[in-house]
Length: 480
Ligand code: AMP
Image (cartoon, rainbow, N blue to C red; front, top):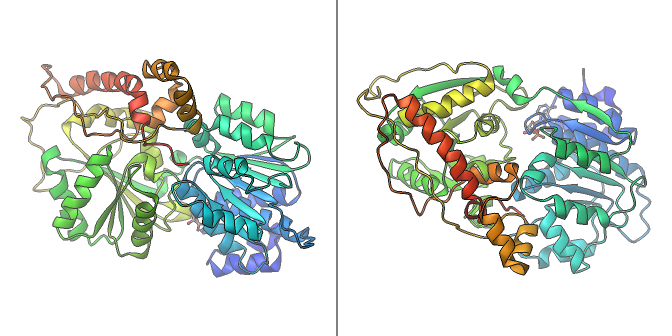
């Protein structure tokens, strides 16, 4: 099936073919005609499925068809995203697919100066891609008017809720024309009860569209585990990158500190590497990503939260230098490769401490991941599992604007949260990226099997993750 049959205009088809796309992906096939018809949509699709073009192309077409420009240029479409990186990527897609149209777009997110954004908004923008926090800053300064929105897109809605943005989303909705006067599109990788509640409030008789989840399309991704001692992981990684001549590899660590250290060590090994995580400035993150995409940086070392939503075309290799504490994060990580029909390779370097994490992941995937010991890097059988180090020191500002505000105005609420009153999802999101400046003392666990030790540690880690929530939230997940 080709793009021609979907009802898109010649200008959009030209932009699509200039991108080299020959066939629409399943989400595009299903979503484009429905969105063009003006209906609300609730779509289950993860990054990597082509969902961005799935909503951007029909959105551009609809705005273009009704562009009765009479001097003023109100914002007519709003795309809300959870992270700055995703906002930048969606913004780039809007530019790319809309290159032959006269529509204007802008991307606004926090962590950068607000004045250039104000200036751009003042000159007139048709499509605005924004993270909720900075958008509300603009709304409160009256530098953006959302009263003429015709199309609203919530992209990666589940992540927005995970990151504590529900209150911000509600505030944004209150600034839009009343429901019924606009088209609403909700994209989410998962349909939790919270997402359904949001959808019930937001969507009018939506068309439900669901495409295969990435963990069912994993056959495009070759997954492999290399058992190796923890102390030899770095050496093995450098060896693999060099000997296999990998030109572009995304490497995951559990902590920000670990990401920095690994990037520095790889540089010493002569591999151009950069780290990307929540403590880096927006400028540094954007630069690292751009250098990685252009091939100047060969290895990008990332934490889970920093990597959310990253879209790097045809990324061939993902390496789990350390397995994530939360099995679902493994699926998100390996989803960075094998995108939109391309083949990819996801390799995990697993030491004895991580065996329980590995079995949790295999349980989620409902399959064993093949294991291969690399010659010269055979694990030392005498090494016993040790608890996985976790940090707990806050390194930045709290997650989600609502929490930041409520803590400021109500110190006792911060104490309550500190006792772990937040919701489980937020804990999970926060647990993905631990600050590791303050490490708990390492001690040997006296058990007989590594598996049992790891299991006990894993249970402890999870409850530690819950207890540490406020500290972990610090500066890690707030991408607004
Ligand atoms: P997304 O899920 O929107 O993040 O898109 C994932 C990747 O798929 C992006 O790199 C797109 O450029 C690419 N892509 C989107 N649509 C197509 C298509 N129809 N054919 C090939 N690649 C595509």
